[in-house]
Structure formats: C-alpha cells, structure tokens
Image (cartoon, rainbow, N blue to C red; front, side, top):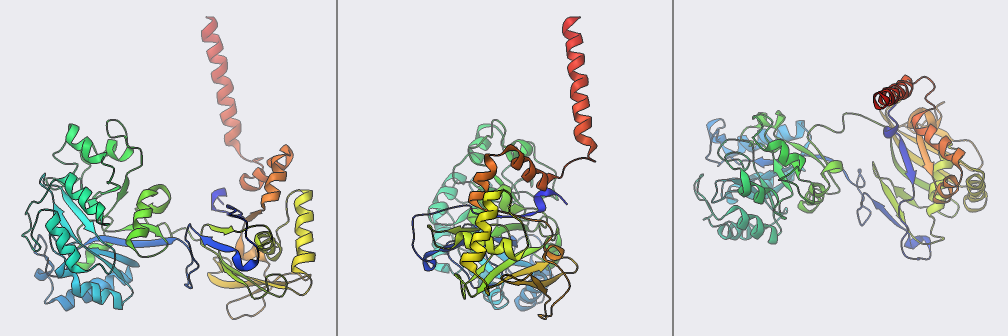
Length: 464
C-alpha cells in the first residue's frame, strides 16, 4: 500500500478558549457548519460546465438530433445520471432564457444547473460566464448587456474587450472561464502571442482556463499551464475540461467534464476549488482508487453521551478550548480501532481518558465504509473495557477485527506529536510505520551506491 493512501487522524486546529462540549465545533474540509447529509465535508463531484440547451443555434445544434426540447432534456439528464454528473453549467451564446426548462428539470432529478452564457470578446475570445444557482434571469440578461451585447444576439456577435468582460463579470459575482482555449480561432491561446496573451493570462481575475484534449496543444499552452516566464503568475492557473456539450453522448468524452472537490454544489464552492487546483481539481476520475472511509463516531454513556460526530472523507478538524472533548474524540477512535499510542506519555494519557473520561460501560460506535473483505458498511462497536465487535450492514456480529476492515490507520494526538518530536528513536518508529523498514527495498541501496560512484568519479576528475 502507498503510504499516502493510509488514513491519518489528528488535531489540526485549536481555536479560542471555549467551555463545554456544546461549544465544540466540528469542521470538515474547511466547512463552517455540520450538514445532515450522507456525505459530510468536501467530496468529489463531476461537472460539465459548457452544456448547451435545446435552442442553441451553433454548430451541432441539438435540434438537429432531437424532435423537441423535452426529448433532449430527458436524454441529457439521463446521461448525466449514468455518468455521475451532478453539476452542469448552461452557457448558450449571449443567452440565458433558453436554459429555463433544463434548469427546472435538472433540479427535479437532483442535478444542479448553474445559469450563465457564453460571451465572445472583442478579441474573439470565447468566455464562459457562470452564475450561482437561482440567479434571476433578469440579472443575467443585464450582465449580457454589461458585456456589450444584446441578450439573444447571434452566435459570433462580439462584445466588450476580454479585460472588461472579465473584470465586470467578476465584480458581479460570476465565474469567468475562457472556453476551449486551444481551439483554433475562438480559443484564447490560439492566434494570440506576446504581450497581449501575457496580459490575458496574468489578469488577477482569471483563475481557470478550459483546455480541449481533443485538440492539439496551442503554441504557448505548456508555458501557460506551467506558469513559466513570461506567463508566470502569483497563483496557479487551474486547468479544466469543459468542451461544448450539444448531445448526451458528448458527456462521455474526456474533454466534457472535470471533477471538483467541493462541499456543496454552488458557484462559491467551485470558485474555492479553482483557487486550490492541486488538491481540488482532477481531469480524470479521482474516485477510482477505493479506500476504507471512517464515516462517523458516536457514544452511549460517558462524557460524550448521545453525541454523534460525522467525519469527512479526507479532513475533519476539531476546534475548541480545553475540556471541550477534542482529546476524548481522538482517543475514542484509537480505542475503538484498537490502535496503540506511541510513547509512554501518550500511552498514559490514552489510558487515563479511557478509564476516567469514557469510563466503564461507555459504548463507542465507529461507522466504516469498507472495501475489504467486501464493499460494505460496517459498525465497530466497543464497550469499555471489552474488546471491539465488528457488525455487518445488518447489525450482525462478525468474527472480523477492526484492522480487517479499516486497513492501516494512524492516530496521533497533539501531546503525542510533541512527545515524539523530542525523541529521535520515536520519530524513526513513526516514519517506519508509514514507509516500512525498507529491509527488502533495493532502491535506497542502489541510489547510495550510485552516489558513491559519482563522488569517486568527481574526485578522480578533480585530481587529474
């Protein structure tokens, strides 16, 4: 197993001093409230951000393949469901009114549709202009006017400059993304070089560009995406796929969709993802590598009696002052999962919390979505001071142990980390738990041998 695929649980943040458990905040993936949903915190969602409605009149118009709007919308949304696409943006050329039916029918099928339009700048650059769900069409039509065009203007009509559209729409809360930037003629990266392109790429309101993988790379594409001179930026430029969708089958192509890690299907969450592209944007399905997920923990009895805490897929942060229960939660997880602490002080702290805070008779339950021995939901339940019991999806006791369903999990408390930092042997032990002892790994030996050979050669060359 790759060491970075392991689960690590620990305290990330301590906030201002608070008093009782009622004031302990649970924050998942930087969210600011608990949500009563099946998936808590930020998670991957697949999005198609250049979907054309039935009345789109450009190339490959849907009306040429479907008898009416109802048939097109039905087929499109059905394909979205099949492809696990939960978020779309409807971006007709200089038009938003044509999106009304698709937005309405998408909502009825739990597919969020962001309203917007596709602009054509004075320089001939196509721009997706996307708004929050529920934005009134009158507001978006006014925005089209602000971009220098009339709502419903013909495909190919040019509006204001790239700079003015980007700045004006950003000020109005919209997200502006240059579309199919490596497509000849209409793309930002094609037919534009030198200072004009540098100014476009370096604009502070630009956070993402759409690349079509079906097209050959543009001349400056690699430099722009890598942020090398003269296209260097203070913030990384996100790369997304958002090819034109005029037929449901297009949704299966590599360039039609992008995966975003978001906490909600809103434009604000999408904007946050674009500002942290390294961890929140993927051009391929990031969920193809399954792993065990801790979904939540609850208690019956003890200090946290009747408390339930949902856990995010990647990061859950516990924020609170002394005495609010942060250590109790962490040590409860460690106790339920049968994970020993590292270091004598951490062991004493763990034992003290189990004996004096949880106390005999308290039951801890941890919900796990496991991939081994099969894809299923399990519940690990442990009553102090008894050993844990693993229940299957039907709440039937199994012979499994926690390690059989959770794989490798590392738990570190704040005091434990402080203790380990003072002891080199403990640091080595901790690292070994992540990377293994390396006794059978020839790569470090080969690297060391190569370094020694190189050093000897350098010495000979210097002395000769």
